[in-house]
Length: 266
Ligand code: ASP
Ligand code: MG
Picture 1 (cartoon, protein in one colour):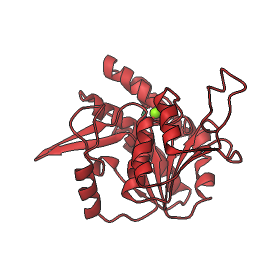
Picture 2 (picture 1 turned 180 degrees about the horizontal axis):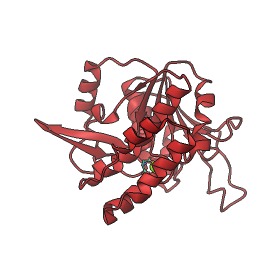
Picture 3 (picture 1 turned 45 degrees about the horizontal axis):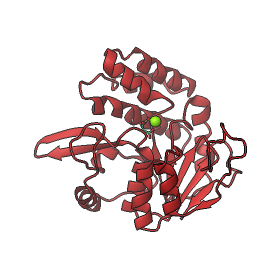
């Protein structure tokens, strides 16, 4: 099975979202799709946390759902779940939770059968708000107790902490949804984790700043880790370790141009 992760930069508006069914058709049913919040939603939510004003966030969701021609009833149902929260992690998680819900409704409309899985029920962390660390033991034991029917659609970035009766939503740190894809890859013992991005792959330098930057077709786990650790932002450094440990290859593909081979990390 494969984990396919779609970043917010890929799924930034309705036109981009409409490309998704065509892309997942290239794979069989043995997939988990991990999505982050659409576009710059997490930034809008951070602003909303400070201003306690959800207007921008609501408008963004309304515009995407309207442009995807979702039925009015569904739009209102989804909007009723968008609420301000005093917990920053819970508020930020709205980005991924609502984005995945919208995608799920859209994929259903396109007759792509799947199950929407709430990642906060799988990935367990300590209680450190938006920058929580994975509790692997709890995550693994909870995962093994459940059965999972593929294809699945789930969220990056979000997780939870539970202690007795207390359940709180946590996050894995900004830009953490690559890491979520790696966590799912490790739990499911995937054959490959494909990270769809709005760039061609990993370059030696920023290609926007240096036209002679080289696109790597292959990298070892250590090379990729060193590059991302030194500030190359294409892939989150935490993504490498769980996949290196299980020798699961990572493929970085340009969502907008699948003809480009991308970068394979193995
Ligand atoms: N949506 C989250 C963020 O923007 C996680 C991610 O995109 O990886 O930080
Ligand atoms: Mg994001």
